[in-house]
Image (tube, rainbow, N blue to C red; front, side, top):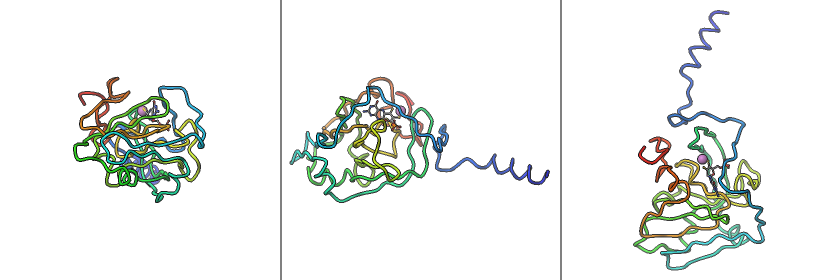
Length: 203
Ligand SMILES: Nc1nc2c(c(=O)[nH]1)N[C@H]1C(S)=C(S)[C@@H](COP(=O)(O)O)O[C@H]1N2
Ligand SMILES: [Mo]
């Protein structure tokens, strides 16, 4: 039916999902696995998360202590610098705000470095992990994060490219200066806003 064909073509031209930042595509059912190091097998009885550096109360939580904190969910999209996005994901864990409220950042703190149990690091302005913008998460789509996706727990900073979401996260260090992490030292953008296409240094 010619009418149907015209309608279909007309729709597909207009149909780019407005949730997709420039240069991104919807990976739909695929969730690629990307990381630089070998996948570590970290059991929850050995997992800890620490907030340290320029804070009044350096604090370490065990798995059980972290699960006793107020739960927080992110429902929304994630965007990888290699151009895939996933729309309408849900992640469960705790808000970084809850962790910082306990550790109490000191006024000179302007940046954080997230560090992983593997040695991976990534840097962020403090403002990018506060006010409901970042989580430590252990469930994705209602089930436990697999080791490949950062389980038992990863950082989630969904408004920035996904390399900021450190897998196997071990903690946050608060600093009074910016300290580029692993990918940032290897040519990625310092901040990584997908809506500004801040993919590589100089973008
Ligand atoms: N520890 C660690 N975390 C990491 C990385 C890494 O190399 N090591 N890569 C980052 C990058 S570049 C991306 S795109 C995402 C990939 O997460 P996924 O494998 O769950 O899709 O993890 C991020 N977190
Ligand atoms: Mo990435």
